[in-house]
Length: 84
Image 1: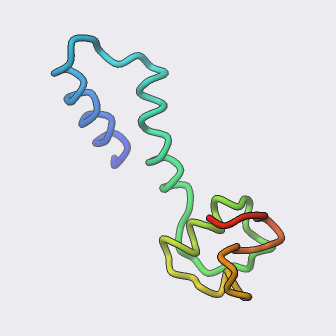
Image 2 (image 1 turned 90 degrees about the vertical axis):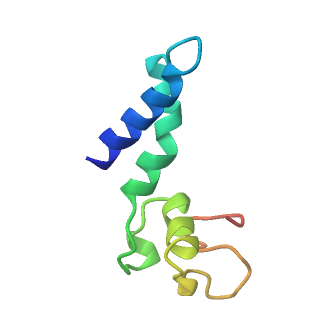
């Protein structure tokens, strides 16, 4: 339901422009929302995370500071090689 609402908002905004959005443009605009919805704030170990992006989401969005145990700005160092 939330994605549908976002699609409708983007479609409404694009109708004010001269050209309608292509399917590729619509997917590109939705990607940040789909990524954010793919993760949640459940507390699981770094070993169970699938990507550095997920580790960064949990660190930044969920406030799980234990993701960065040595406080160098790199969460779950088994997944990430640089700061978020």
